[in-house]
Length: 109
Length: 115
Image (cartoon, rainbow over all chains, first blue to last red; front, top):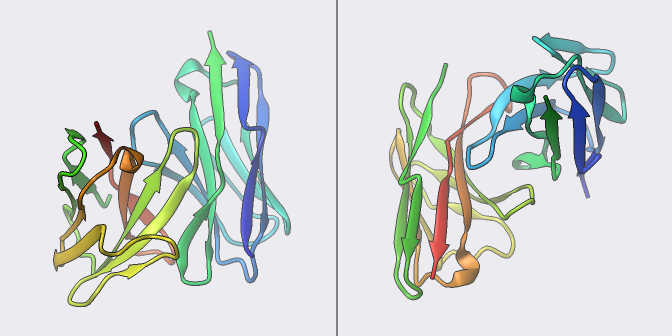
């Protein structure tokens, strides 16, 4: 069974303290690894799609990387407005996206 | 970019009543839309796939007679929770495929509370 597992479940950072979120996956024939940001009471907001090992994408303070078994979302010098839940997901069979449980990030000023 | 809206954003209803949630693609057409449910501190779980012009397909364990889906047009899908019970209280989110393979655009979600 295809699975997407995220760690840590929650992460608390001081403003400016860089860190990484992990997403490990066991998906046959990966057709893309997706990262989303979700604010409380809102739908997921698309961040990145990665398709092949070694691929990297950046957006402001975020950088996503992909290996054959996992993806990392690196957050450089985070700000309080980066506080959110970060979800990773991948297509699986006929399911458009299988989601991990997410990492709840809190950035403290 | 593609925008998906949902209405209402939140609803409170009494146990035993039915509630309809709308999902619209505002600036593009969607022959397929997806409905997810998210419980607190849990991930999104796919409930069903809504298909314009044909019946919806439901994930295992989702009661199709309880969660009625109608894809009325190329821009509108509705989810009706029939005879709602407190355990149906959840955050319901719809999505529509984007132009890139496997890309999804998500609506803002609907918070349902059944008392």
